[in-house]
Amino acid sequence: MKYQFKKMVPLFLLTFLLFLVGCSQRKDVVTCPFTDITWESTLEEVQSASGELLESYPSSYKGTTYVYPKEYDGMEGTIKYMFDEENRLKSMAWLYIPTSKNDLEKVYASLVDRTTKWYGDSGFDSDLVTAKGEVWYLEGGNVLIGVMSTGINEAIQYQYFHPEVSSEKPEKSSNNLKSVFEKIF
Picture: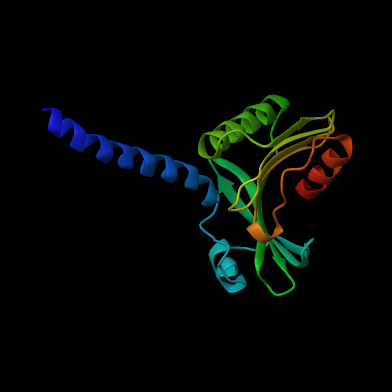
């Protein structure tokens, strides 16, 4: 019995270490939940999979942003695919216009809770008068959930960034809050 126990300890430790390594690597793999499009997808693949184009306009990555209707989690919204000048996908964002202030808070809380379960606590959060948001700074690309609320217009944006355009966690200050929210809307 004692011999079997000694034999099992290294096996148990190895299994436990592999489990810990596997859990820590989860943050390296970032999968966008509101689309099957991946960072490797071409513009042609995005266009053929997305349906009717609603609009397009210049992206902040010197390419084009393409906007399509998109239902996610039973809610009608739009999805924005942002490309760089070489037609490489750099950001995917789902935008939802809530029906009420209560709807806004409920959807925001649900998205934050779900994302926290996947990736752990966010590395940045803010709650300003007209905007609030959370950012997960991950090796596989940043994830941002932001809310804009002016009393008249309200919107929630759930955004995934390619690792090449993701930033490291900034120090929390009012100047950094502005730059973080400029990426949202």
